[in-house]
Image 1: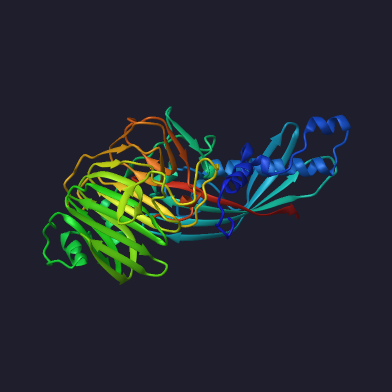
Image 2: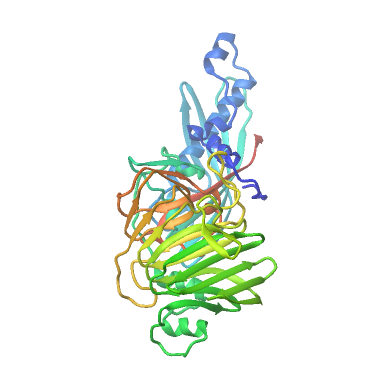
Length: 453
């Protein structure tokens, strides 16, 4: 994969989709048999072409063998890919012997999944008259295996149109399985609070600098501290949350009855302005990106600051370039407007970002209790950027464009058009629901070298 992630656009997708035609055959130069037959020659050019076709065929077989396998593996041989494996393949009357050599296998084990870097050499010897010129391709496969984030499994349906950036979501390679996805709130809170044990009200109160007892916090708008970084905890029904950009600041503005909380921050300079009910305080610190909400959100929208007022504006960017905001919401949710990253537009036909992320997970239980809740979501904006997990029913009033990923349990929505985010498949999200069972997915393929040897 390219080292420089800047300027990610259709170039990324075109490279890999091209690499996978046949599914990978179009990456390699091809010369038609009929054309050469008319010329009456079987020359080196055709030999090169057909050898690369054989390379494509065996790589395609490897992809199908590995990708979307419903199990967790420790080594690639568990999927039937062995060192010195030999394939005997035919293209019309031409036969070839292809040998797989596993040059290196690097395994990194995590709690939920394994990461495997596999370096292969595919060697082909094609039988064409007296031409003996072995070809090879060195390939690097990046594989993840175990309980995987939901965005590896795109939704399909009559009302869903997918624009693929992730190469292995090509429908010819996607086996159509729909794994069971669940949101483990305890795990998500552990990531945020950086605790090994489950988070409870005592954990919450300690971070909010409140009396250290394991009882619920009263309704209100709170700013907490986790290892020197700020986060937001909003308890009770929230009238509105507005996200936006103000000069070099990202801002988050929340209202609850007569109370309001404004956080403006620039994590690059560690400059933060906290304003609660009109009282302002400037501090030196960082926002860790977490917004925990225990209650219904009546309006979530993007907006801007005009004078001393915060106003909704669905055309304004909700997330400043380079920021990451992670919402966990235990309650009903109404997204009132579009929520966009700065500098991205569907009209330009590309999805470019570097580090910007908006992740929203709707919980099916209370955050610090085991009580189950039933929540609904309503989306009135026409364009959402980010990753969205809705625990139950989702209602939309128009065609919805998603730049990122979405999890839908019920089909109570209008038409969806999903532009996948290529960076999702390279960076682990801070909060992401995962599969209940184990899966093995090819995360990336890189052609290192191709030639004669």
